[in-house]
Image 1 (cartoon, rainbow, N blue to C red):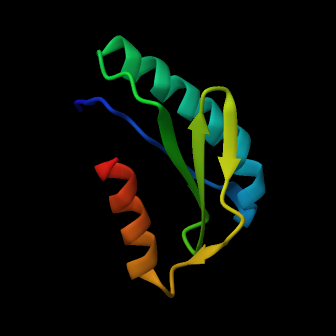
Image 2: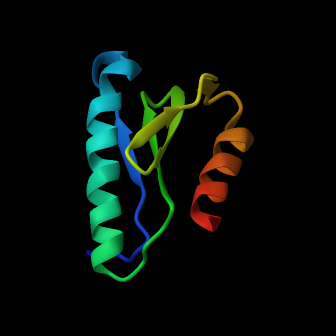
Length: 91
């Protein structure tokens, strides 16, 4: 398996409790930021997502502040979720 910078974080929430995945996702986002910097890909922010498979929440780490989107996204609207994920990758 190969990893290329810039990296993002994606976490599966356990037991359908999406909020419990925030800490893990933020920790992974900090790790992704460190990895990106070591690979010469200094970026102003790192994106992350927590999902139960049915529900999705999106996060952004900018400096030392983690922002959590207040909106919940559901798999019944996959186009919206894919659009957000694509936007994360393009930035």
